[in-house]
Image (spheres, rainbow, N blue to C red):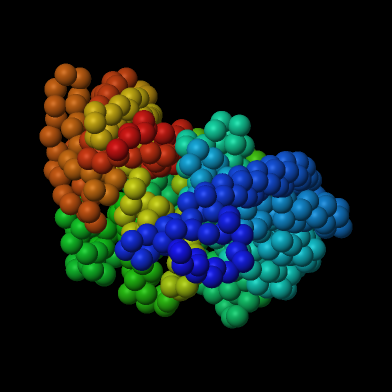
Length: 622
């Protein structure tokens, strides 16, 4: 009989699996497939939920952000108008909305969205923009609102004609805090490449970047003002300054020769005129009073360090300030805390807000009062004075008296703060108001501004194009010189950009100059040129890293003396103009790398043309 089968456990048939001959169990493909399918479903659902949440949060954030940005101008208008309470109320609304917008773009979902293909760049940019606007609302604007409640521009002037420095000193740390908080916001927003974003997002963010840059300029200006004005106006002790009156009728790089010098003293916010001098009282010196450095010496020789009238020949006004201060001390007048410079055109801007001033001018029988207005100041100071006053010393005294009268009226008259600020800003923007401080910490704050006139020694100036003019007539014929410099074309070949600047010089000197103009105006006594001819030495400074320019006059390439200056080139050539003659120079600069954005164009301010402009060359793609 067959034997009985072996005993087996009571196990459901479905759980019985044959054992392979090699002794291993087969994979449970059916179970694994189920788990994979389930996992895919879970991921899809999770992503779907995440997308829904991201879209929902993004829409809420967008609405809140848009509304907040619409309210920001209200804050700015209230601050400008001096209504601190209204500014705070508007800021409260903005903060509530930016907080909501930030919350809508926070969390791991948005962090992941920033790395997804197709939408990652937009998601990341939107999140950054939202956070940046919230940082503005929470950290940048509140100190400004608080500072505005302390500083009232219209109330800064004290009864004795000085400036009440107390509010400025209290506001200084608040504005500094705002400036510090703004730095990372500008950095993060500036890092967004809007060209890679969808237009619906890229355009608003580009607009936001522009607005933040504008705000940054305002905050930076406020920071410098509150940090600089108290010490420079004598909050910590008496300060002494030299005010140079530059004469555009005899051009120098910074505007003109410093014919007269006004000595200013500041203490406790009050500025007074304590003396006058002529640049002819200083030197000339046989040896340079300071070491100008090899770059300056290569271009201008040692003249600017020996002749006070040539100190403004230097391309950097801080070098002019240091040199003039050294001359002043060497002449036995002691140390000064800084040097300022302005010209008759800037004085005309100031006369527009102060109203006319009367200055005493010498005559054959005594003196007579001459009324200076915003309309006639330039002509009187740069032309008529030479026809009516023969003695150069008396001319300089008249220039000093004119500058002193204008500044005295500014300091002691009832001039609206907003109007004064506008006139000073206009002068600074035209490079007609320059300031150098002998105190390093103050100068470091001045360096990046228009007031410093620092061409080769600052980051701002290093990347500028400059066309500077120095009179070679040894007279006062620059009064009749008309100039213009502009970017006329810009194109790219590969990654090299070619920029063409057109420099025009034209003479409006009278044809009978020798008969009708004094010899010290025509330069006849110097014998350098024929009377009536205007000789101008033109110096072209390239941006840093750019080689020797190609300079053409008509169809002819003209050469010049070229020197390397702080990683850039300076090319100098001479142009002579007969009465009525015009000369056009075509200056081509080849930038051997991709470049974009705006450049600054620095020129010598003349009687009719300012000295600073922004130009926008073509951008080259790497």
